[in-house]
Image 1: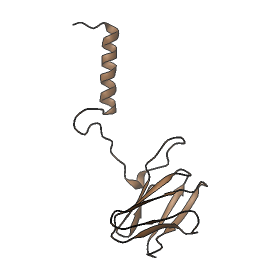
Image 2: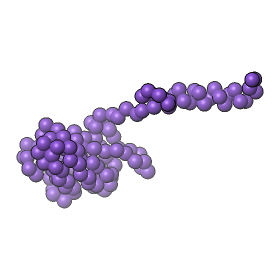
Image 3: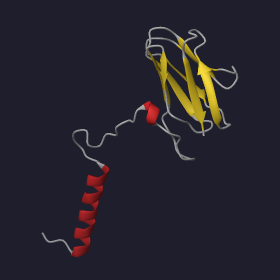
Image 4: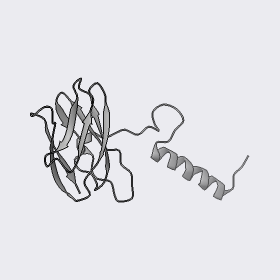
Length: 131
């Protein structure tokens, strides 16, 4: 079977697109690799972004910054319960059970840097940057 030049160009362009985007039916070629939480940044307006603050070994790991009003998930990998409580006590407050518990809160809508702490453990501190 012989393809006309236009059909051949469509086939080649499709194959190139599949190769460039990593789409595939087998293996892990089509799976996205998540970046570390510390290297995440705010998503452009109108897009969704998976934002997680992970609590592990009595410390916080989270995105470098978030968009105003973003939904943030808190995941607790410690056995003890923790909180993510803004230092002013008003911007946000999420309590999360230990052993893999999760909770969500909404980031403030005003850009700025928001210090937070664990209400149960005075040595735990973090910073949420909204921009």
